[in-house]
Image 1 (cartoon, one colour):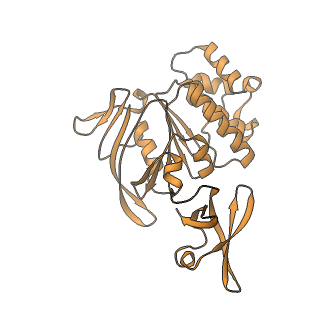
Image 2 (tube, rainbow, N blue to C red):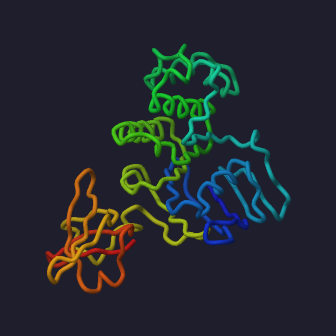
Length: 289
């Protein structure tokens, strides 16, 4: 079992707030931290990795205590078996792909590097430098470099947000494949609800340092009062009045749809809100998330 409990004072765009989180989850699960920018998600990853120290808390991974403010235990980052993948790849530009993986490997085993290069489809690129690769290829290298460390926890901080949708979809499949293939315990930070639904076992919604909702993607994002004949999560792009009704334009995958809003919807919804569009008694309803 992995347990993460931490408190730390932070400062956001709306002023100071306290990060106060208590999470536990089983090994080999994929947990997503979801929420607005500046809510404390990346700080939680950094606390787990030992890059930031919480003011109080407790971190235990597979029975080993990494941090305990009461007992004054604080393992340094190099003693925590963590793999990190960031949005900006953070590859060494003067090292080839093979050398990047070799540098990250604690116990030098060339054969394991060869196997991982083949599994990730990077075998033919092994002697190339990061600058000669596409964004998707560089992110695949960053993922492989994190996995070669044989981490007890893999931390992914919005690793795909800078990529186009097609490449993102491909790498989402890669992440899920490697998560299962290597029996990883993975914590992902994401703003993409489709990504969350596709990858996550559980989701923790972080709102100004606190967990506001926690459960499976269905439990967190879908309202059980709907008939579930259809439902999708979207963002309101515009609201306009036509005669005596109001119409909201929103995205559905790569499509744009228009939904009629009720009088009560107009009082609570605005452009930019994330909503669940679903059916109830065969009529569409719009629920703010």
